[in-house]
Length: 564
Image (cartoon, rainbow, N blue to C red):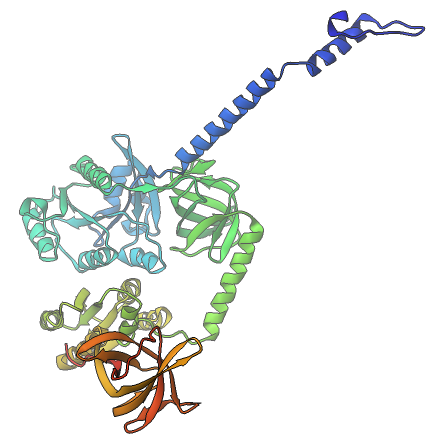
């Protein structure tokens, strides 16, 4: 103990060896060099810095798989093609071979993931888009080589183009004896989908879904297009995404199929989807395997919501169930408020002017339905020829027959007006139009259609502005007042209103332009002074008046355009 510089004295007793050892270790700890502590702090600092660097890396965007929607005419082989790709037997289990619900699956091609969404058709695709769900990155349009372009093919093209989604054409059933690939290509080229080998920019792949011919090439084209698009997403953010569909399961309760847009969704997260919320109790992938977490572009089934969200609803992860519940209550109250008030029509020809003023594109979008092809052939060119450099008329979709619900959903999603020529509106479409606020206009005379479209376009034109002369006054004297100078004037012509725009001329030179700040007759403020009267004029930002200056008053008026 002498080495420690202390002396232990005992009275009537001695310290045993074990006690002495404990005391020695304690004192050594207290006298330890600070070097070890400094090294410890340094190590902790380096670890903190490493954690920060890892955080910075994690906040960077990462590549994500493409989300692909398969569309086309009924019986052209959409599900069979997906069967071959996924190596499953979905088609055999579906009633009549037609897809009954939205499903999503993940496949791999050359170690690259692709997410496929199989929709019941373009109606579901557009309904989701109308609800704000921008899910799809690439659309695969399946067209049967033995059947060619059909009405639903045209509608799928129009709906996809309206969404601004790139299209890959899969010409299916090339193994059929009556397959005519060249005819199918010509029909699609007439609709604006020109093959690359013809000088166009649309990728065409010839496939046989049943035999598997060309499927690998199709997957390769999807991967190449996705790489060109450079699809990326953030991961170190609260997860967000969209609901693909929902259903009520007797054993599981509300079940939602969702696709993640960004972030990582984890088991235990609190999810908010407009009017639904809950903690994720379980999560499964497209193969039915239970997951702890899932990243961007991944489709998963989640269990734990308190109610069923709607297809197309957005979802996001929030901090707590309390926050989620408060958001749901606010959302439901907003819905009740909307029901109590009459919702203004947002998609009328008259409302386009308001959209222009808010900075939206000057494009009048139309969906045209007629009872005969000849009428469409006459009507569409007539309306599109009305386009000018300032306002474009664009026909998003046209077809023969009555206005249906699909037309209304496309109009809602694309902010378009529906024009019906010698057709009616079916009951479901009328209800949907009222619900979505879409305007449907019916006509029997082409001239009336043309006049209404012209009127709408004129309303979308930028207004002109013109200067209107009001009057002039001559400066006869200059008076000093507190804070500046005012001009004692005599009105030579017209009138001088208070708050008018003015320019000051000294000889032939304009020396200032501004606005009248004060106008007085003697000591009283007045609204205007007419010809032949004297007044005092103060001008904002100007006080260097000189006798003989001319003050000219004018105003700038907006002039509505009356012609294209």
